[in-house]
Length: 387
Image 1 (cartoon, rainbow, N blue to C red):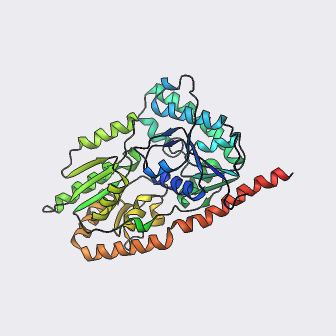
Image 2 (image 1 turned 135 degrees about the vertical axis):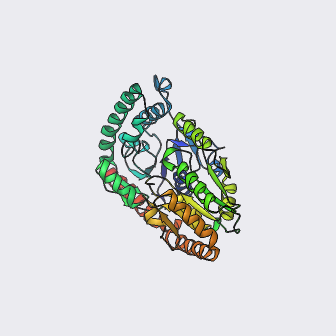
Image 3 (image 1 turned 90 degrees about the vertical axis):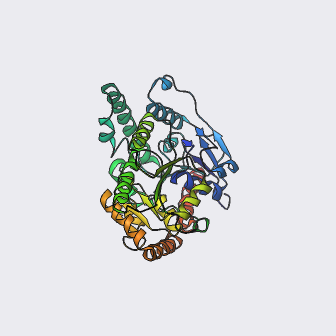
């Protein structure tokens, strides 16, 4: 076996600049790993992926293109990972976004880094079904049932499961009946800087309902009404997919016609870091977020973070120390006004956040735990081959 196990990474898509993609990129660089994926867009994900050996996979599935976008995606992803047999030599497979873990059906030695069990199938299932037609409900109900049956069986066979937070760990136990080892994602704090207060609040995240950009726009509007002379702007920065639900949500956001709200789609990583560095504070409103890289990036930029008190945020943002954990748009607006009116306190919070990231969320810490799991999974293959 090599000094580091020979790894193959399985991931359905590489076309976004999100937390999962950052983790995948770091693991690929650390292990010099190949990535097997079905979708890759070098223009909309991190440019560093161009230095990685990316192998495109995937067969066409009959009638998939006749289905709604999300159903078509799920069918193609599930079919291809479930039926894929890797012919080349490897020590272990590291799967990521579901259903890439289905690659375990025909391939041993899989370490699944679960970013979350698909929320559309589990905790957000009932809510999403409300917005669908009767025909769509029948279709999605059948897909969800099939997914749950297949997933539970495959997850039992996985050699190891890791995840990003205690919040996601509880979801895995609840919905999939399997425990997982928590390994928080790291962050390169040295890549983030504080360039002062540019009179802007920043919320960077994918434009989807679960990220609740409408919540932040509501809070900002309340803030502007109370801080009448404020020159602050709100920048909503994020990627937007071609999913009809996501596009419709974006149209609703624009229809709010909130003053001094600016939408920035598909900004480069460099530009995003510049926005972080000049923000007054970083906002975050995702619903029960799995873990949340955005608050870490805000803290790494020495900025206070104002975030909803849900999900992974409870594990990263220290209320009153590195920022504020809030429960309503009104409370978010009040905290926005507080950091504007108390710049020295805001600066101190930013420094506390930076120190917390440097101490608790380094990639060195991540790989100390991840390497141990990877070696154990790879070693299980050596033992099997000796028998």
